[in-house]
Structure formats: C-alpha cells, structure tokens
Image (cartoon, rainbow, N blue to C red):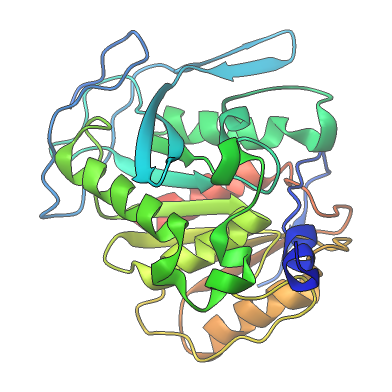
Amino acid sequence: MTTSTLAFALVALVGCSSTAPGTTDDGSAIDDGVPTDDATDDSAEPDAPAPLGSRCTELAGEITCDHATTTIELGFGSVRDVHYQVPLGTAPADGWRGVILFQGSLVSAERAWSARLGDPFGAIHQTRTVRDLLDAGYAVITPEARFDGSTYWDTNTPAYAYAWAASEDAALMQAIFDRLDAGSLGPIAPTHLGAIGISSGGYMTSRVAITYPDRFSVAAVHSASYMTCSGALCAVPALPETHPPTLFLQGTLDAVVPAASARLYYDALVDAGLTAQWFDDANAGHEWLSAAPAEALAWFAANP
C-alpha cells in the first residue's frame, strides 16, 4: 500500500459510537423476510409508503433486522454481497422508496442489520437508522465494499478518485441499478433513491449523489465530506446544479474527518444556492451520532 493510499484508508475508518443529542445551526413483501421480485415502474415519484409492522426486533438491548442477501459477480473473480430488505405491507404502486446505506471502512455492511447496546463505537445507532427507515416505509440496501467489506470504497482510493468510471465500485453501482430496474431486489422504485453513509461511506454518498443524479434525489453525509477529499485535506470544486439536497451529520470532536472539512462541502452547497442542512454533536467524535436515525429519517421524508 502506498503512502497516499494509506492516508486515504486512515481517514476512511468507520465510526459508530453512542453520543448525546446534538445541536443544529441553521408490491407486496412476503412476511418471511425475503422481498418479492416484482418489477416496478420508475416513471413517477413513488406514492407515500404505508408500512405495517417492523422487520426488526429488539430484545435485551439488541436490535436485529431480517434481510436478504444477493451476490453480484463483477468479473475477474470479484464478487460483492448486497444486503437488502423492504418494509412489511403493500408497496406503493411505483414501489417503496429505497435508501442505500454505504458502510464505513473495515466493518462489513451486514453489521448494519444487527447491533447491541455497548457495541464498540455505538453501532446501535446505525442499526436504529436501518430499523427506523424500514418502519417508516423505506427499503434499505447495504452493499459491501471490497473483500467482504473489510476495506473502503474506491472513491477513497487515489487510483480511482479521479477515474471513477474505471473503478470496481462503479461497476457495482451499475449492477445494483440493473437489479433495481429488473425488480429483482423487490418492489423498490429504481429512482428517487436516498443515500447515506459514514466516513468512507459518507464520501461514497457524495460520489453517488454527484455521479448519478438521475438515480438519487437526497443524501446524508455522515462524518465525511466531498467525494475526493481525504480527512483534513479537502478542496471542493464548483458543484453541479443537479446535486441533491444533502444533510450533514458531524461530530465536533472528530479528529479523522474534521468538522471544518465537512463544513467546506456544506458551505459550497449553500453558496451555490443548493439545499443543505448541517447537524453537529458537540460531544461526538468520528462516530455514528445518536441523533442520526431521527435526523436522517426526517431529511429523507422532507426531500422525496
């Protein structure tokens, strides 16, 4: 690993920890937990969801959410698992709205589906985010980064940061879009998607928001910044008018991705007249905020 690659890896470390609340400035799914394969119509924005019940259970401080997993072959021996679930109940005519949650570095995306109180870095808040989205009528998709999620996203790799089309993750995203279009992940609308991710997953959220504006209509960047930034090293260019509304979730004490770096991205959006919102937690470092589930859900609901 080169020095520059190592630097990208270090700033992409996942964070998930228990924190105090912050302050702000500004068709059908079968009941066995496996989504159906019905095709969907992406010609219009999905109707308001009407979920019934929860895919998740909480017992003795542990939350577990049922989900399915599909494997995508990307060629040259590379395969990726993609975990997904739709809400209980009958999907809107155009399918459930979908949210893709991008893992942080070094922690498998499957970990988003189960956590318990006291887990390192407060992973419980990530799983609560998944639960709250499902309960509110959003389908959730969590793809794995390279090597079963034990690495980080290609947008944090110098070789691909400025040559995205050649990256394996670009091929993964196209494969996910193809499956959404075919309805093979269940009745999920293939457009009007939301994106959320922390650390490397936050940079990946920026990447997909900018690269695929025909797919993503809203984003939440957690403990990260613009797609090619690296920790404190950050320069944000002029942003496209197609950039979707973006929520920033940030720990003031974050030493991996300083708040000032994330703020550069937020300020660039505001200066361009684009929609953005900032939420920070004065007591948090590089970690999932305890307020993230409620803040993310409210943001996605306000920006369909």
